[in-house]
Image (tube, rainbow, N blue to C red):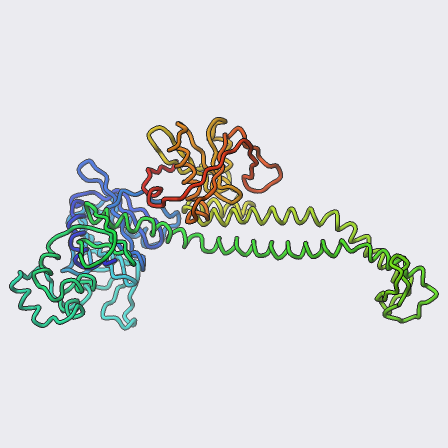
Length: 538
């Protein structure tokens, strides 16, 4: 990818459509991601801004995002100074990766303020800086005077743009470029001379000023999938791979980053809880292994009974203080050696073996029950693990609540939302955690709706409402597969049956069900197709 200054140049031109718009709302999507909702000329526009170290970007978006319920102090500051403000101007600083959004707003006293939002899209140094004229009100990241940097980014400091002595390539015609190219002998030379030039552009144009001029003065947004995947504002013919073109850079960025961004957000939210579940699984698996060992040991209880009998039969042969005794085993017609506790008499040793026999005999009754409970817990945790892997941000919160039921009891019931895929003649509804699954089966599904689930493996519960045909069945099966750990496998087996043939399994955690009259379909998941479908959360 190449989020360079030339791409930012054309992206800034695109988002200038927001000028004169009113900022209605600022939503924090994650610690580093923001959504600005802007009303302009009777329309609502969404501006996505991210200063994520890996996925920094700005673009107009039509995608659905889940908000972060925990607000940081910088979000509160943005809302204080920008909510209700009118966007006066959007500009780029030279051809650097810096966008300035100038906003007019009245303060509580009615005084007119000029608020500037600076967005620096510089990789791991990306930042959002809020200014009153040129004075810093606050920033996403602070740069202290002692950080060995040529700039200071702290409240009340004067903001300075990143310093550079590079040239703005848009200030030169072809003839002037030819003169500047006399000192350019490599791609690296070109990036050092002109501001905003990435290596993938420099590699293509460093020895041809006319080509350089043509490429930077035209756009053709494209994603190129080859050995590596690139996106750029223009098609560089030397890059090999399958090409997908877009009508705008915002559409290009949305397509490239949307799924990556959601995964990054969810990964950050789910990291701790996933590790907790993995630890619980490991603990239960260790317990299960020990239970099986105890079961094998308990099956040898007859030996302890025989040892007790033989000790009583050989009281006359016992020597006080012995730690063993050799006796004749009349069950096998051979001599055996029985270990003894030298601190106990022979009768006490015999009774000790009888007690051990009785304990093992009793264990044969309760250990299988413990094994079944332990296996159920493992199955439950494995389903939680699968649910975390495919969860959305709201799903993660539900799973956290489920894992901490006692701590999470609050007055009133939380509204349960489900993911709906909408088609012309049918609808597919997905339950991605146990709370959603139970609600989906009990409250949403009708007896004659079709229910889908991965065969013999954890997956989401999926309901098909509406027309039952090859297309709807295949889509529902693919969606069930997509929301499972098997999504990248081939020929995934998916069972489906009518909801009326489901039966809740009592005394089980999770929404465990048994089912009958099922059919099985084998499906491959087309991830791009699933992610292109119309989704609604309600």
